[in-house]
Length: 308
Image 1 (cartoon, one colour):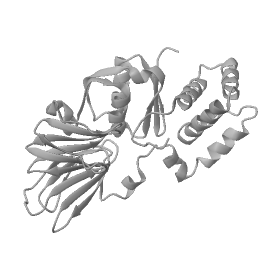
Image 2 (image 1 turned 90 degrees about the horizontal axis):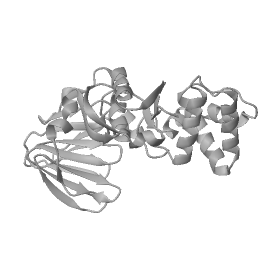
Image 3 (image 1 turned 60 degrees about the vertical axis):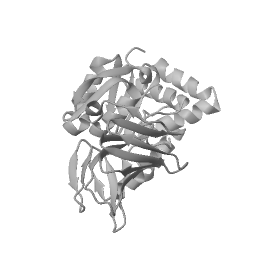
């Protein structure tokens, strides 16, 4: 669980967590517990996956019920109580976000006026540093997304850095996002130069175009619906046939904690527009629109298919 940007787990840990969720759902019977113990004992890989899942459950949800031979579970639960355990499961975002110059909390959107006259709109759960020097204006985005309206200053370039992406304003307004599987820049006015700092690849974007950096590098610009893509600035989340894992990343900014999508539920797709000012309603709307069951725990929400 080292990639904090993603709301996914390895397949075996995911399978173990789905079993644990069922065991604590109120509908489990003794045979379900026995089946879980048998599943764990069937291989060293499954036992390791079960321990990872039990650690996550113990840290962020109710403690596992005492079971015969459950000493390992108790040890892992105890180890997870400290702050280090929170970072280990990736529940609270990258550590750098805690020390950023500017931060928004869960569900909070805020507009920040910079000393150079530029304006930054920060979405919920966003953190970034501001560094304004005589030769350059630079923002470093750690988490979330922001929209920048840049004050002209030919002598001082305006750059937003996020992961391996650098977006340089060419007299413009644009949005930068740390998404669940990519870092992206979207131009809402005039032009931006996007660069991959690992490879040196560059591309220039015009209004209405977006470029992304994924594992393979900087992708070619593509046209997007700017109004839908920036609906968060108006308090809306708009999804157009988007996979539920991606939806979960968006929604987590407003409900807090981590949302994990288990099994086949990750392949479901969602279309619709949802207001962001009522976090519980967001999850209720997803459960109403798709055949999924939502389990809410402190700092953790688990989404799985409704039919077992």
